[in-house]
Amino acid sequence: MQINFYKYQGTGNDFIIIDNRELKFNRGDNAFVARLCDRRFGIGADGLMLLQTKKGYDFEMVYYNSDGNESSMCGNGGRCISEFARTLGLVKDKVHFIAIDGEHESVVKPSFISLKMKDVKNVELNADFAYLNTGSPHYVAFVNNVEQYPVFTEGKKIRNNVRFKAEGTNVNFIEKKYNELFVRTYERGVENETYSCGTGVTAAALVASLKNVSTAQDYCDIKTLGGNLKVKFNKHSDNSFSDVWLEGPATFVFKGEVNI
Image 1 (cartoon, rainbow, N blue to C red):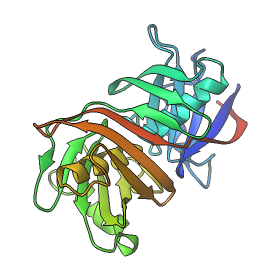
Image 2 (tube, helix red, strand yellow; image 1 turned 90 degrees about the horizontal axis):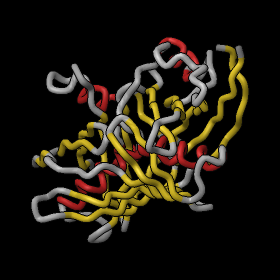
Image 3 (spheres, rainbow, N blue to C red; image 1 turned 90 degrees about the vertical axis):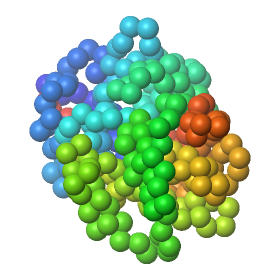
Image 4 (cartoon, helix red, strand yellow; image 1 turned 180 degrees about the vertical axis):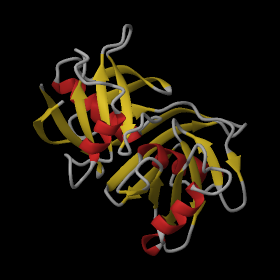
């Protein structure tokens, strides 16, 4: 049997999206997901998403990393699947969906998508790094000369250290340059650097705010290898955050058919 797939990208973070409202795609076939995401033997992507029916919501987002395993929230993926839902006629400009970390809202506009992220609290803030969950777990560290930094080597080392090896963590290296933050991310499940990570960008923006190096009091402009994003937020006196929004593009690339 053949089914349609759609390729989207958000600041270079690319995804295969499948309309699975009729449940034709086997959600438990992790090996097949990994093959589809393989850049040499499959379609190629950082991750795969299923759009499924969920009572009380416009849709459910099911996300897999490129290793084939279902994973935690993906911010760039959330923007892309919101745009995909609009093209299917499921939504207009306002979207209400559910993902593994709970409910999300998004606003779809012609040039960009605004995605509401989860509220964030219990940020572990240390002298040399921070650790927090923005829908996915993130280690965040400021470095010098981030453009030349060995992200793969250092990111892999941290992701596999004694503390994080079992569950894994995403690792972000950031530097403030002029009036924006430049963020590079090593992603668990991809086990490599990606061009952009939405939950990582969100984590970087919130940590920058806590360290008083954000680009503004209630938002932060972020540069990634794949393009620019903006994170808006309300920071509270207990160092928690609410009304966290990730803004950026979501672009259709191509579509095709695949045998399942």
